Image 1 (cartoon, helix red, strand yellow):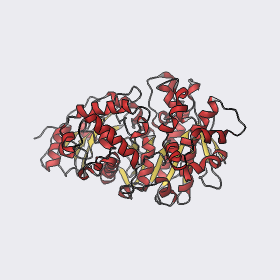
Image 2 (cartoon, one colour):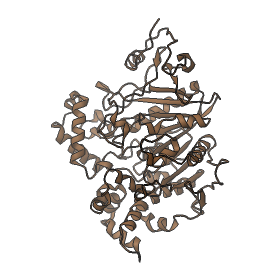
Image 3 (cartoon, one colour):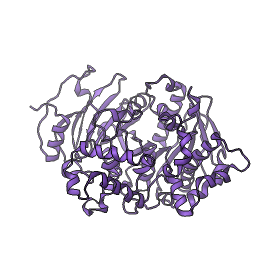
Image 4 (cartoon, helix red, strand yellow):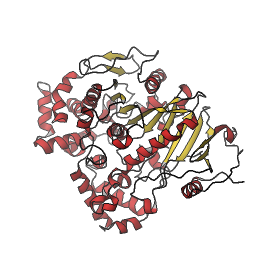
Length: 526
């Protein structure tokens, strides 16, 4: 008889391919027998629990070998089959990152050994639609232990299975060390490779949990939205999922190889070595300290430093053009933005926009790319966009929201609509803090329905029901239409149907943002 294994014991035995009999029957804190949530897969038997919502839950399931020691800065490696039993009752560690007051996962346990996923299921039906969430955080921070991303409320209310996962971040997942050592040529896209490994694990094993491996939707916000777009056009992810919901993060939010090289040089300078053998000997804590110093050194560009650098090898060199040319054929989209994306950064600094005029070209990958190609500045573009309107802080804020977010996201929708069904939205709900507007990430509280720590973020419950019904309907059928909302028309270049989401009443607009789209699309298409 064997005890239920800890995560590290399970990883060790699974990686070695050991097989043995297992004993069950331990009562988790919920009072439900462990056997009630026991699922056998090719990679082991996972003992979950029933949460206070009555939802079956499995936390901290490994989807790859720990990327530690010799596997640091290497592609994720699959686990070997096992008959071992694993208690899946606690979140795995967050990826290593800097502490961030707004990123709750950064305040939890961190480790290089972070490649785990979580599953929530309530319905006992078979072949349930599967929703796999990719968390955001500028590819620098974030993680699935953040209460915002709990799948319990979606799974409780709808016949779907919800999956979340961690992936490597910042210097551990998005720095190209292959520039100094070809043995590490994949290091610039490890975080994305982790995402693919997680989705592949889901496709291979979700049937054992009652899910349909041929009806998987990937959805993500911010960096998770950029990731979702990239996954739709990446050959290595082809066939792993059928639908995508990218929320607030267009395909132009990527970096070029020159920026990646400069980032690497600064890292090497701080590390005091150019030898990968030396870096491999450093502890996680030492590398984290270097990363924090790197963040401070590059504070002006830090939030765009770890955007994926597309070199044409792992994914297309120009994701925007690849999408326009049909690289995501076969994948239905539902996508959109909030009405005032940049307002989020005022949560960090209430005077954020006072400095933004000076730093925008460094922060915005869209503007940075355009300036490098044309030599024109954002101030020139802003004056053209203003025409006869006054130069006010509100107008400048609207300009950068349009240029960096809304126009790019809508052009991605336009490009995909030539090949597959696309549904487009604008989330315009606000909070009592009106100065923030409908800021970046605000819709996540409605998608997941989690209770926030701050009362001013408490979501309108009717809007929660409408949004969850629409997201899950799309995951199930490829259309967000349901009985709680007015009819949602498909998006096309001819109609530009956009469903506006707020608690005052949903409205499907035609040509809602066409004027801005026509004024600014050249920035993306040049």
